[in-house]
Image 1: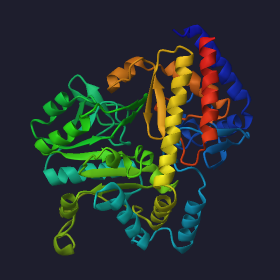
Image 2: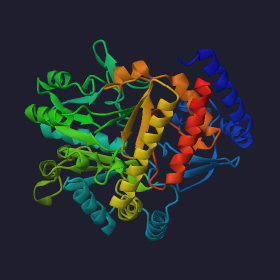
Image 3: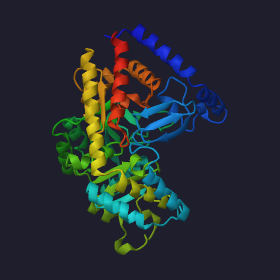
Image 4: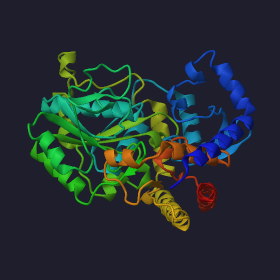
Amino acid sequence: MIERDRLLALKSQELDRFRSDRPRSVGLLEEARQVMPDGVPMAWMNYHYEHPTIFVESAEGAYITDVDGHRYLDMNLSDMSMATGYGLPAVASAVDAQFRKGAQMLLPTEDTIAVARELARRFGLPRWQFTLAASTANTEAIRVARANTGRDDILIFDGKYHGHIDLTLQKPGDQGAVPEFRGLLKSSGAHTRIVPFNDLEALEAALRDERVACVLTEPAFTTVGGVLMPDPGFHEGLRRLTRRYGAHLIVDETHTHVGHYGGLSRAWRLEPDILVLGKALGGGIPIGAYGLSEPLARFMEQPGGRPPKSRFEKVATGGTLFGNALQMAAARAVLENVLTKDIQSRAAALGARLAEGIEESIRARGLPWSVWHLCNRSGYHFALELPRNFRQLATVDDRELRGYTRIYLANRGVWEAVCDAGPAVSLSATAEDVEFYLNVLGSCFDTLVN
């Protein structure tokens, strides 16, 4: 058992060190507070930190450098959006060339065909649409499912994150789904059903009245507090039940597609009706994408390719900047040069070494924790057995301990922006980077037990 008073004292020392070592970031943050709430362009940037937000000078490969000259190995990868690595020459060249020719014309380019064709080949869904973020891709996927089924309700699993969508920013309440955050309508969860992950009985009970348009899930849950792995047979049962009760299955691979060539849908032989991608697909350029089964793609099309007789015939999809030329150039460069079998397999092997090293470090110090591994990601839960659902995870998680670990690592050159998501290996990282991380983590664990 880790002594709380000692943990708080260690954490206080690390926070003092962090502030004193970063005077320029502290000064810029005070200046920024005059023009932005909390001094940041997006309030979420401060949510996970007890220390002052750092200001970044540059980033390259697997590393970030702040304005005070501190260099960090990025093990959160900007919440997986930069899993490819920073400043990749192939992506930079493609984006620069396309920007000079025109970044956005509200018309397709040949890159669009190349990207959609490669996604179809790789992920198995034959037709694709593009947005500016996975949040919007999930929004449109839900709308397609609703329009096709004529049903209003959706089903999600407790503890999920599918972007900032009113329908999914919900948690279980006494009388159904209730909003997780302020600013959402109290009734925004009226058509959202929530059941525990890995619970097929609860899933079937929620689907039985045949009012659910779609089930939205990740292959493995990359939730707050760490990754939750599916039970053996869970995905087979999920697919069987959605088909039985006429609900479309939407698989959100925003966080997981970088871990395996063709995503976990290909690795685990999942059969979604709609597959959602985003984040790392653009190599730093905002993008979202979703693949459609052939029946759903035909459903979206106008008969004979004619314009709709009225706007009320259309599914509510689209945006002025969606599928723009710049993001298509970036995505093509990423698919051809970065998200390749060799590079992704290499990152997954480093992720396995990461899991092995974390396990060794925990066992050597007699800590009663468990380790999970998912391709290029690994991490640990504060329990002897891995939790199976979000309720179990929330019971065993320790935010104070997580917070101490991340500030300790930051002071020694490792950045885990969302530390409870677990460390992830960049596709630009090396074996030496992984060993560096493990050494710093081990020294952190030493302070907890000595």
